[in-house]
Every structure is written in structure tokens, then in C-alpha cells.
Amino acid sequence: MDSGLIPGAVTALSSRGETHIDVAGEAVRRDSIFRISSMTKPIVAVGAMVLVEECVLRLDEPLTEWLPELANPKVLRDPAGPLDDTVPAEREITLRDLLTFRNGFGMLPFSPEVHPIQEAAAELNPFGPPLPKTTLTADQWLAKLGELPLMHQPGTRWLYNTGSEILGALLIRASGQDLESFLTDRVFTPLGMTDTAFSVPADKLDRFTVSYMPDQQTGELNVYDEVEGAWSRPPVFPSAAAGLVSTAEDVLAFGRLFLDPASDVLSRATITTMTADHLTPEQKAVSGFYPGYFDNRGWGFGVAVTTRRDSIYETPGRFGWDGGLGTSWATDPDEDLVGVLLTQRADFPLLSKPYQDFWTSAYQALA
Image 1 (cartoon, rainbow, N blue to C red):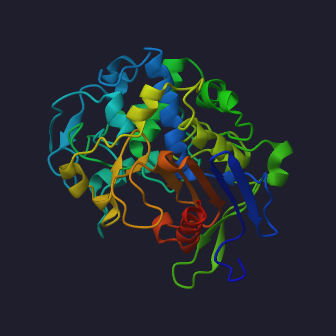
Image 2 (cartoon, one colour):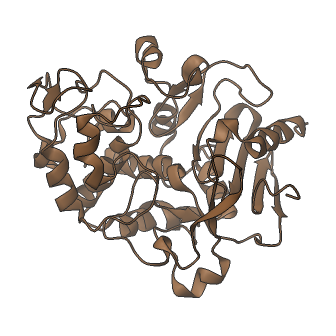
Image 3 (tube, rainbow, N blue to C red):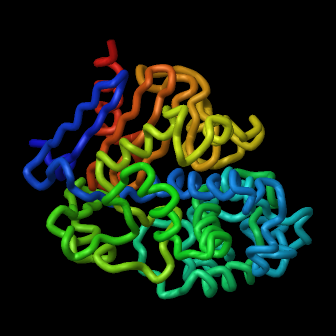
């Protein structure tokens, strides 16, 4: 804190009947509201599985009934190639594809050159960073996405992010509600998540935090989003990939869902399915994500799953996800542990000293 590395933080740990919530920094308090960015993804995935359990959605059926805009997709011969050099898709996109990020469209591995598909998709902001500023409705967004070819055949490659955005549009149509109302009714209210939403109402802005982005050269923190900025008003089309705000206690309640055998939200069978590793070794090897990321991890439905222990806190069976604006959550069933770190310093979590120190301390403290 004193070094200026992070602008305040709230941490929460729950294990074996004990809960500890700590606050660091004058700018935050126990009930401060944070932009949880990509931690939105597992929450929306839970919403999708609620509809699977009700047989409204099915994991392996084509999504064309709900998302006709994405029917009969074309696929680029080369993800870096021209948009008109395509082949027909070998099959339609499924819900399983969206949940496992194998829907054929998403963030490509880093390249110094911008590919034509990236330029064509820029208006849709399908790759991040999170800032809910689109003026497109869900229907308009889907229509524009449906005009673009896929980067890879459905089911074959792991491509981050866009599957969650599509999932949000799917839940709107399948539930017959706007996305926030659906999640509130089926996830937030049953779990007691009273401060989780896609925007912060005026009467809660005094608890909302400022978001910061470090300067690439100096490391100095610059304001990314003010308290009365992008999240102070409801978005036109909520980002199911990165749009939620929440508190430490709300995220802790969400994390406990996966340890509760009597949950009213999801069955044990569904939780086991969500937190299994669904990627093949070949898909991990060519993901192009952060180098080495999948060496000891897999991907479930909206969550990363640890497959091999190679640090104090990376234990087999542990799962969760992080947010690029400075947040982290994980649940470890073997330790009956849920941990939450909320700050508002944008960073890649695995390279973040606060991230590493928090999780090291959390596991070191276990009896």
C-alpha cells in the first residue's frame, strides 16, 4: 500500500466455518463496490447452467433456435487472412462451445499486426478491455457479429472472452428477461448478493471505487474510470464477459455456492461438471494465451481449473477466475476454502505482486 502499488484493497477468506475480511487503504471500506471485470464470466456461466438444469437450454444442441443470427457460420481459412477467404463451418455453435470458449471467435494470440477480422470486429469490442460503452443493443450486437466469419471451426480452439458476450445475449432471449433481472432472480438473490449488478445506483456511489491503469513506462497509476463514470449508469447491452460490479462479501457468497451440497441455485452434479477440465492437451498447447498458462491448468465452464500443483496456492481441483481491473476469486474444495481479492489496479493477475502475495498468505495461514 505505502509503495503506491495498489489504491486500496479488500480481501476475504472463508475456510472451515471461519470468515475473515480485511480492508487496506483509506480509499476503501469493507462494503466498497468494485468492478470485477472478467470475474463476471463464471457468474454468467452459473446463470446458463440454471437454464440447463431446467431444460430450457441444452449443452450440445445448436443455438440457432435462440440465436439465428449466428446460424450457418463461415470460418476463415486463416485467422490472419482476408474476410472473404472462408469455408463453411463443419457444425453449428453450441452452448458447450460458449462456456468453454471453443465457439470459434475470441481473442487471438498476440501479434504486432492487426488482422482484418480484428479491425472488422472493433465496433463490437469483443476482446476487451472492459468498459461498458457500447451503444448497440443485444440484438444489434448479435446481428453485426453474425456478419463476421469465425476464426476457427466450432469446438476446436480455445479463444478467450467473446463466448461470454454471446452467452449474455443468449440468456436474455432464453430467459425472456433482461440480463441483470435474470441474474438477480436466479443467482444474486438466492445467494444474498445484494450489491452485484451491471451498474452502481446513485445511492451506492459513495461506496464505489475509482479504477486505475498503471502507466506502461513509469508504473504511475492513472484513472481508468471515475466513480461517476461508465458504471454509474445502466449499460445498453450488459457485458456478460466483464461488466459486473460487486463486493467482497458478495463474491465470497458466490464462491461458497460451489461448496454447498444443498444449494438452491445449482445441483452438485452441475457444479462438478462446471469445474471439470474440458480442454484437450492439443487445445491447451495452441491456445496462444499467456505463455505457460495451461501447463498446470485447464478450463471448465467459465472457470480456470488447476490440474497440477506447482506453487503454494495452485492446488489440483482449485478453480476460479480473475479480473483484469485488479480482482481475483478462487474456491478450493479440498481445503474448504474461498478467497477473494478486490482492488482496482488493472494488471494481468498472475504477474501481480498483490495477487501472488494474497494467495501465498491465504494458503500459508491454513491449519
